[in-house]
Length: 187
Image (cartoon, helix red, strand yellow):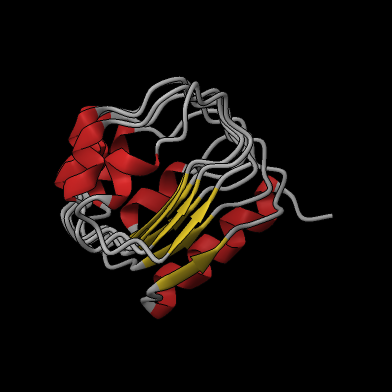
């Protein structure tokens, strides 16, 4: 089984080689090692299947990050400093403990894929419509009862997963009126 010490060795090796990709999934990490945030040229960071509870504010140092995968952890808060990751185009937060999304998340104008399934979200802010390039959105298995009508202006949204929620009515109209939505997954 991989440990925290093994992760530190991988990070050190990545630093020496000037790596653009760092794979730290399944390392039994309870936090993101601070050395990760020294890898400012990092473009892809994989931290899935750990026991991470927070993404620290130091995420702001990873300004070249394009892919952040923290699926299957225990993350309950995304720090507002995520807005400094302006190149981020894929964010995978499947199966965590998120109840609220920070508005700073919606300043990431390069975002193409956003995966939020299996959290504790009860509300999607209307500011999600600021993600104009968003192509895939997974909101499955949360506690949503509604989707913001502003999502109808997300012209590039092609796939929306929304099953396993508590919708009072089908949110189809607000989403499909103006988008080119190809696939909508609902219960």
